[in-house]
Image (cartoon, rainbow, N blue to C red; front, side):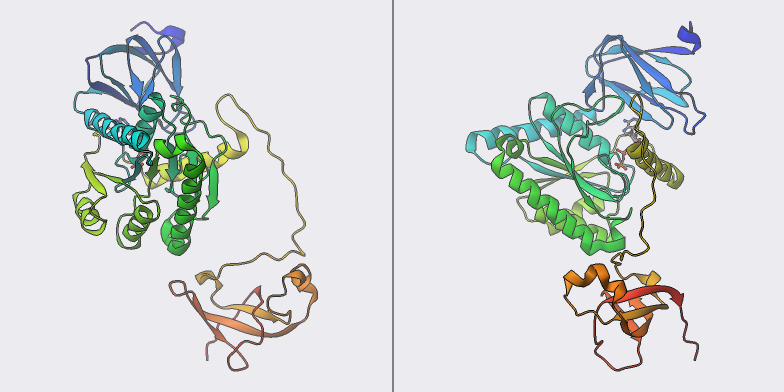
Amino acid sequence: DAPANGKDCTRFDLEKETELRFEVEAGEAAEQVELELLSGLAEVFGSELNRNKKYVFGPGSKIAVFTWQGCSVNLHGKPEVAYVSKDTPMLLYLNTHAALEQMRKQAERENERGPRVMVVGPTDVGKSTVCRMLLNYAVRVGRRPTLVELDVGQSGVSVPGTVSALCIERPADVEEGFSVQAPLVYHFGSTTPGTNIKLYNKLTSCLAEMFSQRCEVNRKASVGGCIINTCGWVKGSGYQALVHCASTFQVDVVLVLDHERLYNELKRDLPHFVRVVLLPKSGGVVERSKECRRDTRDEKIREYFYGFRGVSYYPFSYEDDTQLKLVPVTPGRDLTYHVLSVSSVDDGDEGARKSIVEIPVCGFIVVTFVDTQTQVMKVLSPAPRPLPRHTLLIMDIRFMDMK
Ligand code: ADP
């Protein structure tokens, strides 16, 4: 095909209810790919395309251009793969949206709250994408739904290691996703909920509480309901976290993507009024390697400091005097064998905290074992139980009792 601006250009004519899937090569040296709608109507994950506008997709992008009516598009550049598929679950996803919209209408009529939807399934089944589509369809018919992001590994809202909520007021930008203005973000601190499942569940409850409070004062938010994106960890405590989320958010609908066992378990364990629906995953969803996930996380953090696409930020770099500051530490396994000083500061004397370093210590202990499950640590101590004081200062120094 005739190359515009020196790039390869391929035209695709799509029949109705089909999608063009393409991937842009990963890696910094990779060339971006441009998409242009020539005729007809098309959307990317629920966001409509404008005609004759060039949409630019960077390295690692995995995109589907779906059309309900039929369309023609051009791809400029060299995508890693590009093919048209007739086999998509889009009709089922649209029907799901239609059912949620019925619930919103009913909520409006009966002065009730709109649907609270939890999207679950293993990793790489398209959970985030389904959330994005349902939010887009809702906002396109004038709703104001809330996205609740509980995927601490791959957050669509903030940096990894956080959970968050975002009010959706316009469809996602085709290239950049949802506009992130004034999100509510909580620190979790790790990319898997298993690191501290209690904290994870606590933060889920905090978000639920905040969302409910907003619904009480904002009728549109209440009717719009929420779409909750979850982690791909669906076994053991991960499963319990999903059950916890369903209960604390009082979800009405659970969409299970491509996991029959999970579907059956949730049907068994959730109250009967919760509608649990099994949906197929799209054949277009691409499995991402560990490296790919890590790169995406790095990129998210980089964006936070340096901006992305047209927007550049200029972060500051400075030194802060931390040598006299104390930082609270949550006991974890890495504490094992560390020597701790027992400060003589009075327990509960918060006012004294600033100057704890100036207060003498009354003895030392060594941590010999930390049970993170029960939050108990075993210590070596010169004196019998109990500890005289409970403010402990960690030393870099470790001691292993070999006797
Ligand atoms: P999950 O949230 O379950 O981990 P995602 O929704 O993030 O999965 O999807 C994984 C990847 O697959 C994303 O890069 C997404 O852009 C891509 N993707 C999703 N649906 C399609 C599709 N129909 N065609 C092509 N790529 C897709």
